Image (cartoon, rainbow, N blue to C red):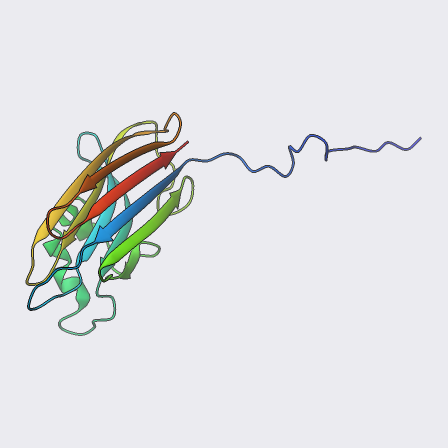
Length: 171
């Protein structure tokens, strides 16, 4: 007697496990200044009490080498630098990227994948800091709960170095 197993009707084999995701949209405003340099930007996650738990992205001048290497000005991202930047060897795999000019940038960070990894359930803050040579520095903070119960969105708007920033958290 021959037995045949049928899985196609259940759809259980081909369906991946549901995972959460963070989507961050960052706007770099166009500034009318005499000497413009693209900003350095750090994006990371902190616990509600301020402990850094995950670096998501760091934009800096990765092509600048030698004595005046692009890493020289990373400490200008003062908050990020004190919390976790000074302990990283740059370029850091998966989070380092070149500076970006004015425009809007959308970044997706799926749960379980680098650089987000696995977050324990709890209250967190998405931190975004920008600093520009011959310019200013700005830090925005967007609180969120993980995992989200349904899709949640938070937003903030900077005054100088950052434009609109939006965080969407999906369960």
